[in-house]
Length: 248
Image (cartoon, rainbow, N blue to C red; front, side, top):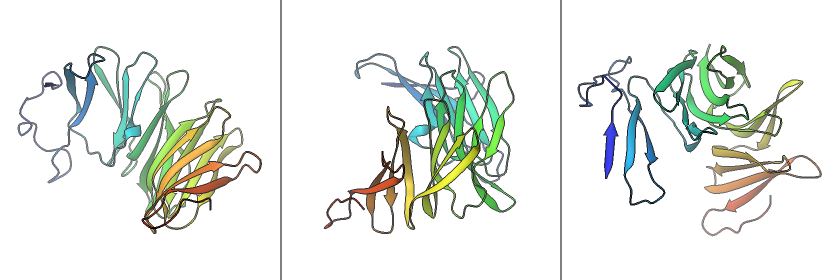
């Protein structure tokens, strides 16, 4: 059985909630579900987190749980929004009001519980993945990671042991961006026709692993940093029908 709980004061009928701020665009409902008990035979609690903002291209990485198992969500399309639950009520912030900010949002929480979000925004006809660090008691910090991208899609963020962000994203090619004490750096991981649906992770030694889709040949690919050279080594994990997996 599923139970849906709207925010206090909201109409229960979705039609009564009407349209969002964008003409002819029905305001989407951002819902979060939590299983009350360990057994899947128990009841789910479903809450409407947000129903008045424009958002799109959400991924599984848009949601993270903190050390207290409380949910944090990053989302957007017109702006970048950030919502979190304190155990009693939901809180909301506009993290970035840049034009078309918030698509492909990917969220990570550092050891202090601060959120880091990679996402795409359009400004002055330039598309850009941006990393943002925001705090509930401090002002938002937005940084441009790559301002010279031709295709802005599919960001994924992970933090290393020092709390530095690493972002994979598509710019016609698959790219990796990271920040250290010297600032932001970018590199090409794999060539043309790849980079959709990327997902990035770091292992216990601090080496990076990225899964992604090569849409030219229809391959699922995996790249990891070579332990000796420090460069990425792509692997065709699930090739198109009739092909054989191999290191590239």
